[in-house]
Image (cartoon, rainbow, N blue to C red; front, side):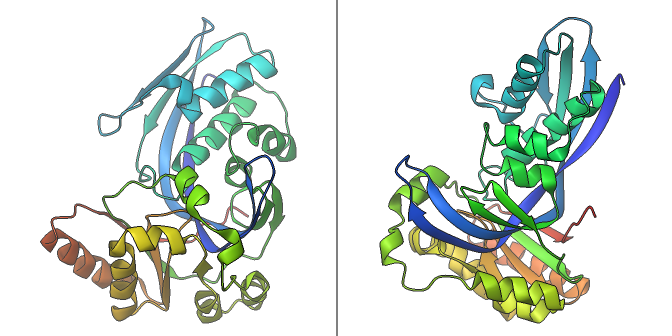
Amino acid sequence: MEKLNYKARAKINLALDVCRRLENGYHEIKTVMQSVNIYDELEFKRRRDPDIILSVDSRYELGDLGNNLIFRAAKFMKEYYGIRQGIEIHLKKTIPVAAGMAGGSTDAAATMLAMNEMFALKLDKEELMRQGLRLGADIPFCILGGTALAEGVGEKLTPLPAPPRASLLVVKPPIMVSTKRVYETLRVNQIAKHPDIDGMMAALEQGDIERVANYLENVMEAVTVKENSIIAEIKTMMTQQGAYNALMSGSGPSVFGIFAKEEEAHAAAKHIRSALKAKKMASQVFVTEFYNPF
């Protein structure tokens, strides 16, 4: 196969708990992860030479290739599986950067899936997920997609029933959050209330979107919201505009709200855009939905 196109979908965390800090510096987590229909588009082309060529649309800076997850994923696949031909990858970036939505991880996952198909490696998803963990803790979920309980550092995945259909409003305010620093700042032994992950899973089993919304909780808000009050303001605006509930995704700063109807989500999006514009905050706003590939 000479050419392939992939959609790399973002994720949100419906519930996120941090259980303890491990001796290696990582943290043990327990989270319900969900794919959403916000995606980057990647085009892959074979090359006759062995080079990896990465390009991107003009709105996004590639930065240091050595730290770019797409480049690292392609380099790993070539070296580990003995692929001699090169590959050309073009990225059309839509998922907000440093947003708590696994934008880099999902691009790396798409790269691994595409190279598996393009070079006829015949690797199953479990193998790709195992190898993806070498590059990033969110990559195994991004390869799996859909709805899943993630445990350990994020690598132990259990597929869950998809949430009932609903509209999502996602807002990324113009602030940058370092996941590493949030974890370093979080005092796990001082967390007063942990999310009810079992309750969230039961709500998904029952197919009750209002119950799902009731169990939205993220312990990382204790750090990121404390330092960035605009996140709490966006959550309040969403619920005031009719969301069942709203939550920060991952380490932030993106916020999502769950709405019963698409028109309600669009009306809330218009209101929040206007409110943030008045504060001179150029935010990224999306009305979307849950995505499940199965």
